[in-house]
Image 1 (spheres, rainbow, N blue to C red):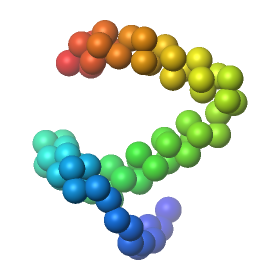
Image 2 (cartoon, helix red, strand yellow):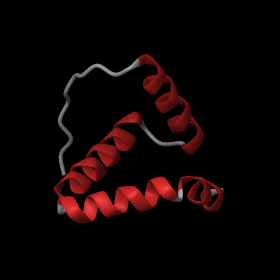
Image 3 (cartoon, rainbow, N blue to C red):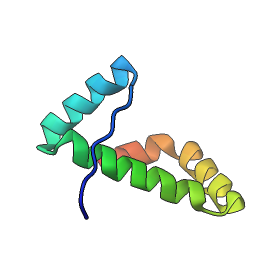
Length: 70
């Protein structure tokens, strides 16, 4: 798929975190933003009841999920 340029603004802290992340993972800002936006849109399209239940589980088990991710 052909990439298309666009401009936007982002919170300074988020940009700093993004730059740290791309450096640590050897990825481009473009690839991370593309993936993040695609995942966000996909998640937003899920049925609201499923999305709410998923959010609740993720919130309830946030600490455990962080430890598992390490």
